Figure 1 (tube, rainbow, N blue to C red):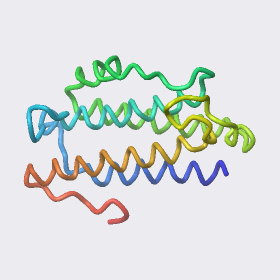
Figure 2: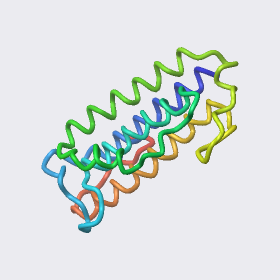
Figure 3: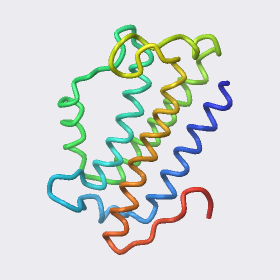
Figure 4: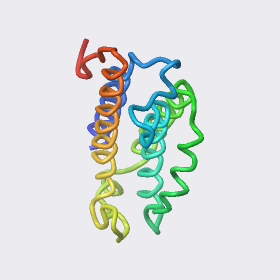
Length: 156
């Protein structure tokens, strides 16, 4: 079970990197409309959400639902390079977290609540995968708006 989850996380990270590789530091502040997140903020939000899933699955009280607080940290992100660094660290932390768990621990139910309440702890890995795919897709649209062609995520 652990090996499969580690592969899922590594693939999600690799697919995200490939899909967004065409974006450069100069694209950090780009956002298609004024009310959207910038490229850097999209990556930072993805990183923060990985951390949020791991933390929420690790705490008896579950997930921190203070989304306004979470968005404040994202709003301060202006560098795509620093956001990518955060993302790499978040994926590494998630892999270490999975490696520290037994199959039995991964099958324990998440705390009750509105976010995946009662689902097996290991479910956060598929949530990380889905959420990362959602934001890498958004960033491929950003790339296209900038006139860039993103790389196919599943292989070069």
